[in-house]
Image 1 (tube, rainbow, N blue to C red):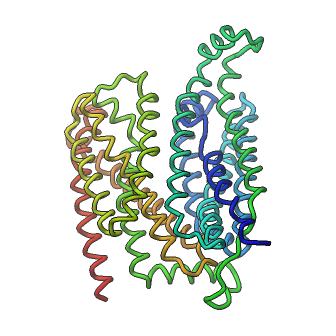
Image 2: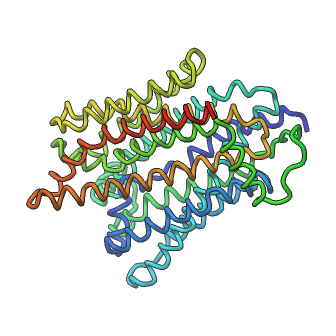
Image 3: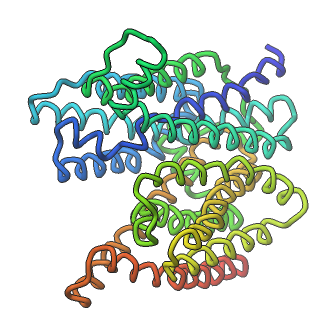
Length: 433
């Protein structure tokens, strides 16, 4: 098969990322689980199960992708997503115990799907370029995939909440003259059913991919995926540049992700009307459409550490501004550098790390180590932030939860500055070792 046969993997990779990640129920995820009959405690337990599945399967799935084939793992991930959404869409209400068990299965399959796709789809796309001698076009691919994902996220954020709104959907049916009757039960399932459609499309895209060839210039591959995992981990540890890229990425990603996780809480403490939360979040997601164009030029004209330094300035500026808890619209300004920084991080880490991996047979495993490191760092920062808010709450006594949250924001820029100093020390010591 000629190398040009792998060219279609790149647009298929972009389509897969869009269909796999654009989830119509995201704007209403928390209330959806509660409205379906779960308690807040059960919802929290499901999130823990989902995160544990991702963390536990992240690296093994990457090793299996390198061992069995990236296309197989991408197809497997899409199959898991279809099963995940089928369970979600048709789980019966009325029996809380059965509902929790079914949603627990849903969250495990969801985490397994995320882990299976992580690293495998990116490795398949990058090695498809390599098969045609076009590795230098990877920034252009990242540009396209991030822009399409940004548009898809905007559409699903705007439309997902509308699909869930029984009153809006009834008015829409009346205005369009369609005879469909929308009940509350139907409206609750619509965002899930739309996401099930995305899952089927993602599966079709995955089946259309072709397994690209991998480099054989580094000798025989390890005999099994577990040895491949150890070999990839050792390579990251003994390669200063790879270690530094992952370390820098997790320092930036963890703190920005933490802030964005509590974005709704920040909106509330700056006085933003609740009805506008989804609209503002959707508009901010369009930053992901602009950033890749800038990032592409930055990797062409600036050094890696120059680009990471620019991201560090953005993150610190955003966190410092947010710490003042200025009323809106001024408080919204600080979300711009933080949102841009998140997109820059994803672009730079993927570009520089893929460029370092010369043995393509372990690419998916190495990319999965990146995902695992990022998730562990995010979890650790989340635990620290939970301890911080608990301590502030005890010290302040009568402060409301919103006041505690607002005070805790003042610690974030200085925590980030401390991690930057530690990052610089570790990177310098690894260079001189």
